[in-house]
Amino acid sequence: MLDEHRQLLFFGRFYIFRKNEVFDNPFVSVGFNPKNKLLTGYVHGLRTAPGRTDSCEFIFEGTIENNGASKITISEVDHVATSGLKLVTANVGRANFFSINGQKKISFDNKTLPGDCDWILPFTNEEKISIGERETTVNMSDLGKGDWIMVRLVRAKKAHFHSEPDEKSSSQAFLVSGDVMYIYDERPDWYYVKFKGKKKESVGWIRKTDALAGTGN
Image 1 (cartoon, rainbow, N blue to C red):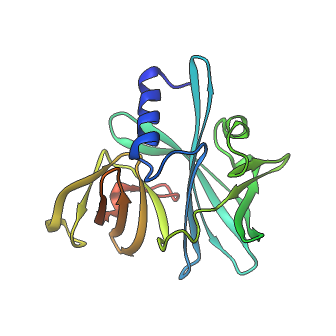
Image 2: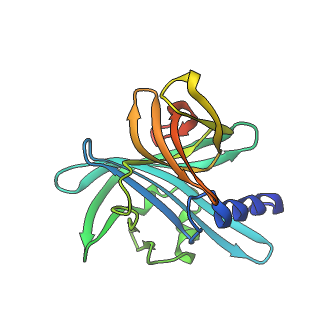
C-alpha cells in the first residue's frame, strides 16, 4: 500500500508529464528493435480503494524468434528513496508474440507476473492487458506509433542529456527517476533519447548506467 506522499508522486508523475503522455491505467509502453529483434516494455497499473492505492510495476525484455516465441524476463520495479530505482525480482519464462486484426500482442504465463500484479491488473483497462486463467496478454498498441527501438526507465535520481555521446557535452536538461526513455539509437555506453515533456521535447544522449534494464543492471 502506498502512503499519501507516494500517491501524490504517482498521480503527479502520470497525469502531468512523467510518462511522456497522459496516464491511462495501466500505462503500457513498448519498443522493438528490428535489427536484433529485441522487445522491451514497461507496464504500470494501479488498483485504488478508499484510503489506499496498490501498484503493479514491471519491465519486460526478450528476443523474438522467427516463430513468434520468446524467452522473456519480467522484472518488478522498486522505488528507492535514496538511490532511484532498482529491480527486486526477475522471473524468466516463455512468451508468444502475435497479431490479431493488426493489433500486436504478447502473452506470457501468469506465474511470471511479479508481486500482486495478478490481483491488481484485472482492475485496469482490459483492452490493454487481459489476464486469463493461465496467461496474461499485453496489447502493444505503442508499436508503430514512432520509430523508437527501445524503452527504458530512468534509474538514477537525475539523468542528464548530452549533446554528444561523451561526458564533456552534458547539458542542463535532465530526466528523473521513473521517467520513460524512448530510445532511437545506441552506442556502447549511451542511449539516444527523445522525451516529450509538458512544454517541450528534450533530445540527446543519456548514459546507459542511468537506465534500468531488464537484465538487472
